[in-house]
Image (cartoon, rainbow, N blue to C red; front, side, top):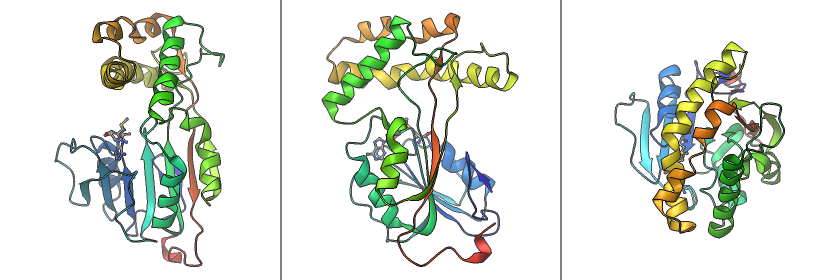
Length: 258
Ligand SMILES: C[S@@+](CC[C@H](N)C(=O)[O-])C[C@H]1O[C@@H](n2cnc3c(N)ncnc32)[C@H](O)[C@@H]1O
């Protein structure tokens, strides 16, 4: 069954699938999941209570730090979802071990991340100074905070090390701007340009001012979306993957396998 980006052999329509999404933000993914699969129960956690509070009944939002020991029972969830936690986590192996312990055996984790290494549309590394500087600044911030931004490149291997099996990794081009001749990529690029223009301040303000110690004025001058627009630069591949937890003999009921 197609859930989010992965094909996961659980019947989300027929079964009560218990899903945990860590770092849920506004809860948009949790809400979409719950709308699409009314039988599911979805829990979204975040450090900040920023979900707007208009979610369906089968979603709950909880304040929690996913880097602390998880408060849920072991072998509990059918699906753990993580998206966009790059730069937020100091110990990814520990987080994956917690996910493994709290997933029911044979159930699934999916993580979606994007690389901070921007590339030109032909896949070569971007030579555009503002984009290159943006990537280098992210790496510098990570060095100082101990929270890597390069998890997209490493998550498949780390999940395997945590014990997950059948790891599937998918990579996609994620255009910034409507430069593509492919209508679908053009549409995605149009939305992603908006994402960059609207998101940049939130992405860099705390990191640049609190960690790198630069002024807010400097940050605005370096806004790379101004360069991205005419030059049709894409973000580099965005691996998406899912993997199964195999930590005991119990499995999801056969009736839930599609
Ligand atoms: C880039 S946003 C992604 C939001 C959401 N996952 C999505 O894709 O729409 C990252 C979110 O992770 C949250 N976050 C960061 N560190 C966290 C932690 N240790 N525990 C829980 N949430 C965290 C932030 O508060 C923020 O809302």
